[in-house]
Amino acid sequence: MLGHRNAASPAMVTHQNNVNDAELHLWHLTSGRLQTLPLPYRCNALTLSSTGQLTIGGPDGLHGIRLDLDRLWD
Image 1 (tube, one colour):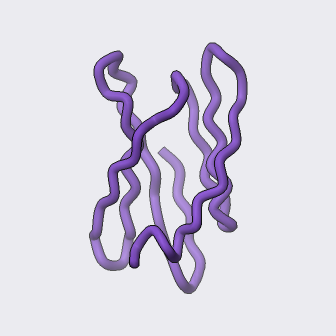
Image 2 (cartoon, helix red, strand yellow; image 1 turned 135 degrees about the vertical axis):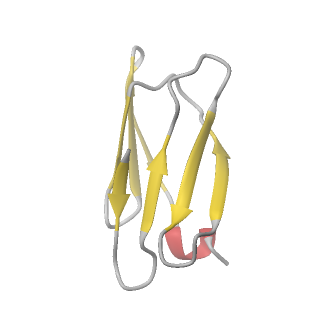
């Protein structure tokens, strides 16, 4: 579980290590809103940068995805 915070979109991303749960859960920390997104890769580790760069680490290597955090909460 890793957090992101800037003036526009404080957010936290999590994933449960469950074979049947292929989802990312993103919380907007100040409003409490939740977005669930599909997890495109097998995951052992996550990082979320302040610019919305999501890095997924797993048995298949590292994968980077750019999230538009402001648009996500519109």
